[in-house]
Image (cartoon, rainbow, N blue to C red):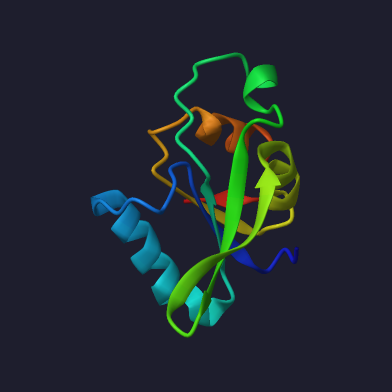
Length: 117
């Protein structure tokens, strides 16, 4: 990942559309001219556990792509792999940040130069 590319990460799945999910998708649609990546949780992570347990292989995220106006999963990765990848982005916009403790994990794993929205 290039440090110049931004990313949007939703801590909620984007297959059920409500106000927050629609905002996330609209934000990504507006930013596609900037080669922005979009990732989302495969399922809601309700567990309140120590960080070492939250970053287990059980938590998965999808990287989504848009082809001809239709969003599809390009790949599915473990949360720990997502955290490693996010370290390469200059800016990370965290959507649905109050829905999951994953927000704290994303911030804790971030390099000091990274910007967050």
